Image 1: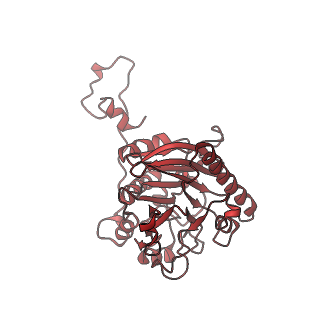
Image 2: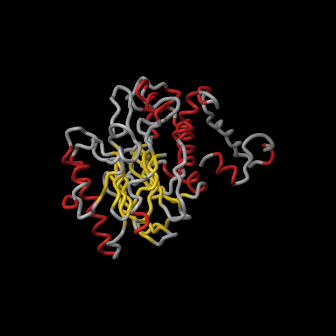
Image 3: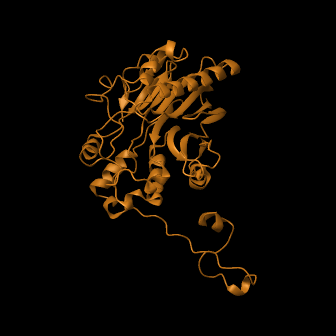
Length: 354
């Protein structure tokens, strides 16, 4: 139980709580841990502050639209991991990273977050109060190790409960799936958040994980009668666009009949200059695009989030991430969508970049 929950019970945590008022065997509750504060380099006006502010820029969405973001947050236990030794302990600490994550979610304000690397065991402690306060419901990560791996991190989905109603969920080994009813339009959308097998040589395993997820969604569509529903398939694929996963998602015959489009494949038409924008910039690695958002023919992108601004991209290329201005090795990507009709279809190639 954290200190905020103790305070909610009316227990004073410091001062004013006399021992004489306690039972003989009781002890004073411990003083609360100091709230995390941002490091000096993130003070307003600094270069890092500007980069961090831009990372949490809002993704606009009207009541009739649906905004979706995918983000690999880098697991809570990063501070206990040996990788990225160049990242100092001050930037690895979870209390600071948690604060930065909360600011990022609140700032972007997407209707749906497809999250990866969310720790199962501490999900309720670390996320539930914040999400409820921000009016988000959640499909929580599921611990399929049954506690044998305490630091196990999985996929999760956060959704605005004022705008979306949860209808169905399914947990796979490398993905979490759900069906949501979009309350303003009464449309149903299926959402998949995935974090596919990371070993470079396991392309066949990633493909199997993809197919099992799509089969589960298709099966539920058939059972529920939601056959004409939209689909968002997003996450960390752990391979680039030339891999079997992306190629399969582009072919209906390999994607359980779903007709899907790669959100960033038409980057040239949508103001994202040059090659496909990277989404991953870890120390010791080249900048890569291994995170993707695919969407079905029922949806039309209206605003597309640039994974990096030009300034962020230059900083990441120079010093990599995590850094003082961003707490993960991945960055958020996503878009605001409208449901396809005659009016929205005519503007399919005119989405703005934000």
